Image 1 (cartoon, rainbow, N blue to C red):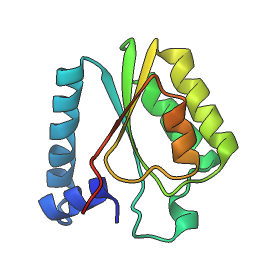
Image 2 (tube, rainbow, N blue to C red):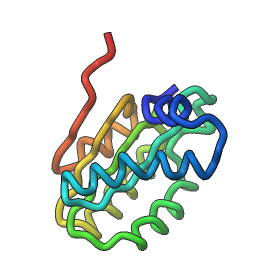
Image 3 (cartoon, helix red, strand yellow):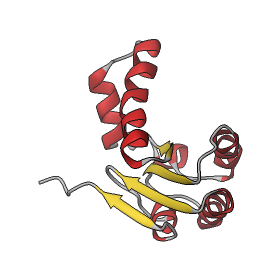
Image 4 (cartoon, rainbow, N blue to C red):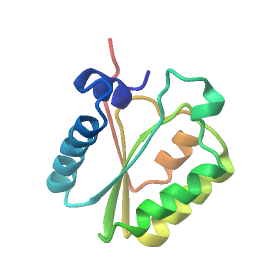
Length: 131
């Protein structure tokens, strides 16, 4: 399971309204501390890889979310087992077309296509490895 998913599962359980409120707290804090828009692209790494991999179906929701943001800098919180390199390239293009500076925060894993997205960022923030 991913770090972000695990945090949410432990914090709330299945109460959707409580989950939404809990999810927004750290995002608002990150946005305030860093002075940037925040976008989350996190997969539940406990599910099968095809279901959680980055794919073309992710482009529309990401585009919709970007349309709701209006800053000059963004932090993408990214946790993924990977996926299509072409889609990763499209996500990078969308981010860099809209923002002057793109940061990627990786709380757990960003494999394969996730690594491509991270390497295309202006800044990468990663969690310390678990021991």
